[in-house]
Image (cartoon, rainbow, N blue to C red; front, top):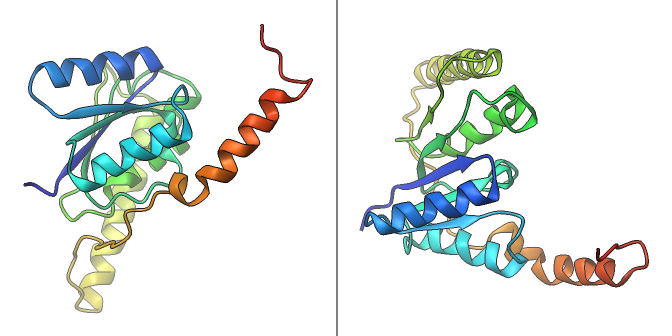
Length: 178
């Protein structure tokens, strides 16, 4: 069983569901992750990726914040040339950072053209990589992947609290059910 995993980042929930279905139909174990899932479903999908039950997790924007997934060696960003918040320099840096914890980590931007955000992200990443290589050479350090032992995601740690707050919000008069 390979310890290498992939994150495929798309723009919409429908894209995430469609790509995960396509991958499964072509023999690649996959799941999708987006805001339409419950906290427990998101947690389960992350655990499946971490445990090697699936090889690819397809997600929308939510994958860029605070996930420690050292098993991820490839981050594939689809529609990378779509201008806007989901493909800004900050968002792209956070996305490609998911692969930085793995010695074999890489990111691929799928696009028809190179946007300013993509160029800036590639420049910053190259500069950071060179700084790290210089530091490693200076202090005789060897690169290695992070070896995390915890399989708990942030969702596991706070899922009961998150679900309680969500349920409370849905019961509040401010929540419009229409």
